[in-house]
Length: 557
Ligand SMILES: *[C@@H]1O[C@H](CO)[C@@H](O)[C@H](O)[C@H]1NC(C)=O
Ligand SMILES: *[C@@H]1O[C@H](CO)[C@@H](O)[C@H](O)[C@H]1NC(C)=O
Ligand SMILES: *[C@@H]1O[C@H](CO)[C@@H](O)[C@H](O)[C@H]1NC(C)=O
Ligand SMILES: *[C@@H]1O[C@H](CO)[C@@H](O)[C@H](O)[C@H]1NC(C)=O
Ligand SMILES: *[C@@H]1O[C@H](CO)[C@@H](O)[C@H](O)[C@H]1NC(C)=O
Ligand SMILES: *[C@@H]1O[C@H](CO)[C@@H](O)[C@H](O)[C@H]1NC(C)=O
Ligand SMILES: *[C@@H]1O[C@H](CO)[C@@H](O)[C@H](O)[C@H]1NC(C)=O
Ligand SMILES: *[C@@H]1O[C@H](CO)[C@@H](O)[C@H](O)[C@H]1NC(C)=O
Ligand SMILES: *[C@@H]1O[C@H](CO)[C@@H](O)[C@H](O)[C@H]1NC(C)=O
Ligand SMILES: *[C@@H]1O[C@H](CO)[C@@H](O)[C@H](O)[C@H]1NC(C)=O
Ligand SMILES: *[C@@H]1O[C@H](CO)[C@@H](O)[C@H](O)[C@H]1NC(C)=O
Ligand SMILES: *[C@@H]1O[C@H](CO)[C@@H](O)[C@H](O)[C@H]1NC(C)=O
Image: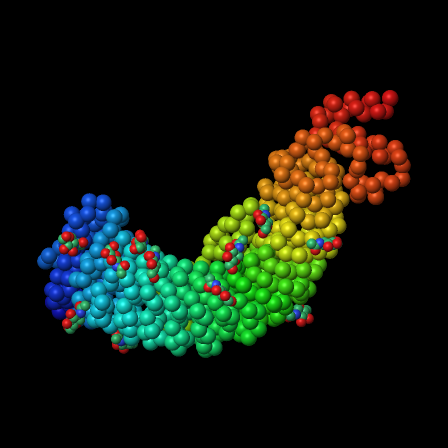
């Protein structure tokens, strides 16, 4: 019994190495690549490469055991099927010709050459022989010239990542023949229109064409598409806002384009979470149907368009909405009090991890490419990008630069998760609600350039996180309440252009203040005594206790 057993152990351990070692021609190609790469340091002194991963790449060894290389374990021919050559070049530049030897390894299914400072054009017929490719990542290099049409053609290609290069010219028509599930072409210099044929691909789940110079109308997608994330922001697309992407769409970033016309009504109802259309030319009435179409909406950004009309009361049906940015439009009417019912702005945040629907052909590795894009909001007086992974930390209501009128509904004080509330540059009148003191997480409050009157509510002293405040250019009067944060907000510009605001923060004494805040007037109308008392009270707030007691003594005796 023992001998056969030993024999099988022998076969198990040694046979694979003896007979199933990597193919000599493939090993030769890999060594040639290594050689080209090391040569390019000699060509250019500024070029630095990290050879740690290539150390064991030597003649007379089995290339299937080399780092960064993976061979087919299921076939006796031991073909190289995966090469991860990402980030080998650390600085400088290398010519795209270093890739030539690799293009001979026709068994490749996955090739990653991202982040390598590779410069120059992809050789015209470069990838034609790599027909078995499933995943190709060439992003973060300096490839230029046109995208070769053959790049889209491998029958089983699922991931094609070409972002952050210098590709010019048009997107090839062969994009219609591709089977890709994930396609990223962002941050290149692509121009012209997107071939209509793209809508034939119903496998596409993620399409990122952002930051190019693409123009024309965006092709209608088909309704059977699996598209979940579309980013076409920062281009020059025009015409109607594209709609009808199928029923799986979750993220639509179409901001910074030239889309015009009304907000489309023919969207398919879908689990959309994130819709960004800022910096376009969308006109017509506020889309009142939005809560019906996208009941799961969390981020809705329409800044800098030409929307008119008022916000419908049933906007509060959007229970997940936590970022609403409608600034710089022509909206009017009163601010609906139902906004105070927006659940995600008033209850504890729930961190939601987005699981993409994973259809046929989807592999775990593809998940890496499903980067949900950042978005830009107004934050502390400047535009700031927010990474999607942090978006659960932000709760924002921005209605600035419109023509809203009427009073601020006190119900907004329910939105206790708000970090930013910007109602500036409208025509809002009446008092600032006392309930604003409940917005204890608020960091930014901008009510400037309105018609607000009365005094700053005493409850503001509770705003412990407030670091940016704008109350200028209203008709406010009276004393600025004291509080740990309010005392720090001592820039006179915060309060400029009002009727009569006084307070230690801006070094305007309240002694000479003839007027008193309206609410106190309402509360203390009974006696003239009280009024005298108030002016004393106002005068001594913030002074040391000893002084207060002295004053009280003087008053009483
Ligand atoms: C290095 O320079 C030589 C001659 O200038 C050129 O033929 C070769 O393609 C260059 N190699 C790389 C990898 O840039
Ligand atoms: C290649 O390796 C890098 C780490 O060096 C990793 O981040 C990347 O995901 C790998 N690429 C693929 C396609 O697995
Ligand atoms: C592709 O294969 C053909 C036939 O073997 C060969 O003639 C051609 O040079 C190859 N192309 C590349 C870019 O390797
Ligand atoms: C595509 O994938 C199928 C199924 O895995 C396989 O049978 C076929 O050979 C692949 N085609 C190519 C060109 O590799
Ligand atoms: C892209 O090409 C332009 C013009 O040829 C050049 O100025 C720029 O440096 C290139 N960018 C990169 C990242 O290579
Ligand atoms: C691509 O870049 C190379 C090297 O920087 C340059 O010589 C070539 O002219 C560029 N090609 C195009 C089409 O811009
Ligand atoms: C972008 O492409 C245009 C030609 O289409 C060219 O004039 C321009 O220099 C390119 N810009 C960059 C940064 O490569
Ligand atoms: C934007 O679209 C309008 C028509 O709606 C057109 O007149 C204008 O030229 C376009 N602007 C750009 C920069 O494409
Ligand atoms: C508003 O959008 C237009 C393009 O539609 C852009 O030109 C303009 O700079 C944007 N305004 C602001 C303040 O961002
Ligand atoms: C909003 O919710 C209310 C009550 O749940 C419902 O009656 C109304 O039809 C909803 N509106 C929309 C547009 O879905
Ligand atoms: C409020 O909105 C206005 C107009 O959109 C903007 O200029 C201002 O910077 C914003 N305020 C803050 C504090 O971000
Ligand atoms: C602002 O509202 C007042 C009434 O409260 C009205 O008289 C005034 O015309 C409005 N201003 C603008 C610019 O709409």
